Image 1 (cartoon, rainbow, N blue to C red):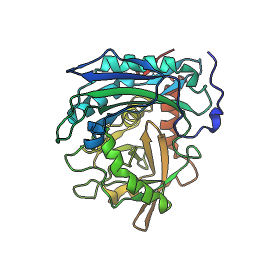
Image 2 (cartoon, rainbow, N blue to C red):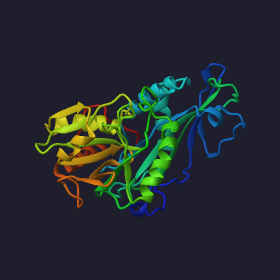
Image 3 (cartoon, rainbow, N blue to C red):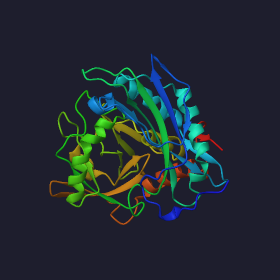
Image 4 (cartoon, rainbow, N blue to C red):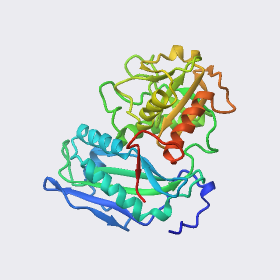
Length: 341
């Protein structure tokens, strides 16, 4: 199979239209059989539920080319399960896990020429999403929905690749107590756009959001979870009911415990204690793991011992092991890598 003629090594993190995408519609209480289409456009009624009341959820995962030339995905079963949870919370019909995985296989195979080659540093980003498609003017769930998957080849999420980031403590809240912070819904990300723009205008790479109830504990950024490493190499993961259950973060926990033999603690992390950690990182599908060099809390700089030049020792080990599993260089736990081609 011949790959597309793209400068893979200099690819940015942006949208490029690929050949095929998957579409299935929910009507009269059931999903249709679905299938692939070349049409990248969506036609909606002006009163569609997604436009009026933001009934929408989505996922994000990647397809990789391994060293042996296979095309694989990483733990897509967890994406399917998380999307089921998101749909239930938003009173949307669940798109079954088995169908999710089948649709995923179909769309990756149809766009195999767009999967970047091994060693390029690029991947095929995959976006499954679902939205209310039928008209609804009263505040209530819609009756019809559409599930879709599109793909786009992408480079690193943060420009310049893996380098230590500077984060600011945000004055805004990412999610409400007992709200929707634990699901992957577009409405959560819409709320984070203004704080994100403000952070960039002030010279920061991202925001650190605190818990919305007391504003004393670390939660996450607009698009990634935090991990911290102590001076004696213990992994500390913030715990909260309003944090998105990142698949990357959960995988890092297993890698740390079962492969690297490190101690892991999942607990509330107070903002006041983060200066005691040796390393800090952001983890998520898009960024994988990005090191944090500095957190600025309203003028007070909190610098990590790992510095601003490169990843810390343990963050680097976690990154190398996780990406090694994803790319097929390291054997991971059974079922983590799903081979497509």
